[in-house]
Length: 389
Image 1 (cartoon, helix red, strand yellow):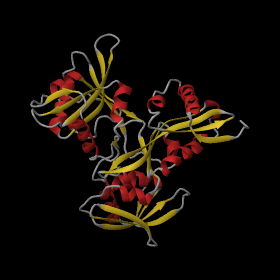
Image 2 (cartoon, rainbow, N blue to C red):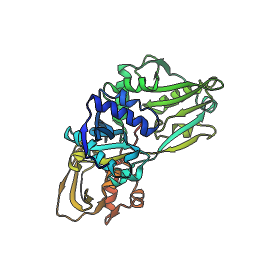
Image 3 (tube, helix red, strand yellow):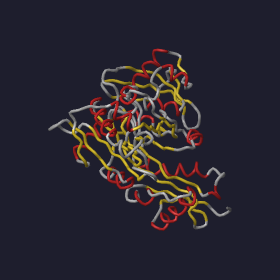
Image 4 (cartoon, rainbow, N blue to C red):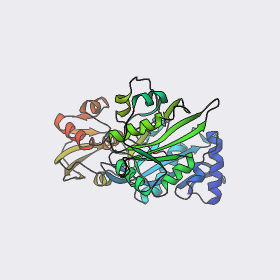
């Protein structure tokens, strides 16, 4: 390992090398390295002519406060087993972010089981992530909404609906035109649209099926988008009608929105929830991230804050919100609320639903009023990221 380490964007040869390395490092092939080649940026580390680390990066928008914010979404990163323990992942992360920042990314999202490593680099999880399983018979007995029709296939109208519904949460990807096709081909998805008779589409459901080893099939939901409680109930009714072929319905991690339609509709609560590693957010450019985010139109305030920077020092900032917009500028005024850079990410995503949750996360505030105002300013929408990359 005495040979010099260099970092570079991947050409065709390095891309193929990284595909082979990822298969060795993960223990199985990573399909997205091939599937996302037209759309992703790949940065690699090379030692002695061999690729020893790397990872994909996507520059896409994510919705926060109803507005699209340019985000560096990192996925499928790895380090060669023989190179581990040398902090190469940290340097590799910096190199992966660099070209995406140059292209306009002001925040970054990752999903990783190595949450401690991610936290050391400034990412934090705004919310927990669950996968759900419920008996198909329980859905059939609990939901019987009539007046909706299901039609097979994805349409432009349904894609518009998905984007509009995504704006109502903090975190969903503003899906580029290629996203749904990649997602469907990758997972072999079947998509259904839901609407009252002769009305526009109000719900979108995509699922994957796999033959069960003994009888019937396994059914996993990947997309669940509904514009109202009756639409969501109609979609759950539709899933319940698969009871002759699928014993249970599985909602892939993060696929089921965090609203109570399922919980409040079941006659018997016999669901299983499994916790998964969370998606994590990092603020790359504080002033730009604040400016580009959406804000409540009925809030006018100015709050002095102190925010930890990458070196661990604190800077003093004044957050000013009004008429649905905000900016944050340096100030000499002592902060009334202090955020670490990881706490800032959670607040930005609306992860603090109350002042109690903020304080229990370690947020320091000398003014309860200021903390209440800050929590309210980003809690209009809940954090939810159903997309995987």
